[in-house]
Image (cartoon, rainbow, N blue to C red; front, side, top):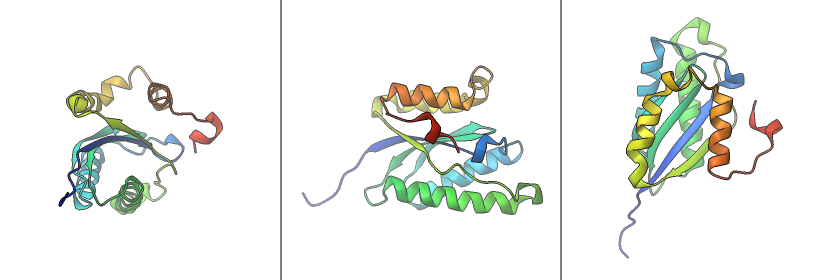
Length: 150
């Protein structure tokens, strides 16, 4: 086969360090756009970026040349530096060390995108920790609670 054809969708979730609510209006939309731009630069176009005050969701298509680990390392490092430079009160901003990444079937991309769009409404009912545990259980990810949060 002469070319590499890839169509892998991934739903990525990660929180701010200690789930501190750093992501507030008006910077929230700017941050989402910045994250989408970083994904695009790495050849992993974002379909939807959203989240809440203490976490981010990214639905993107992975490239054939960028690994998931490379994508997350760049996205988190670049956006952390960008956030810290936005205002003096954001100087302590940081992301948690880890992340969750879940495969998405092409037939469910619209559904996951809608889920990401509804984060503010969704988090009137559930915390990030509750939401994340549901993802881990839904995808049968083995985890130790004491190592999930930082």
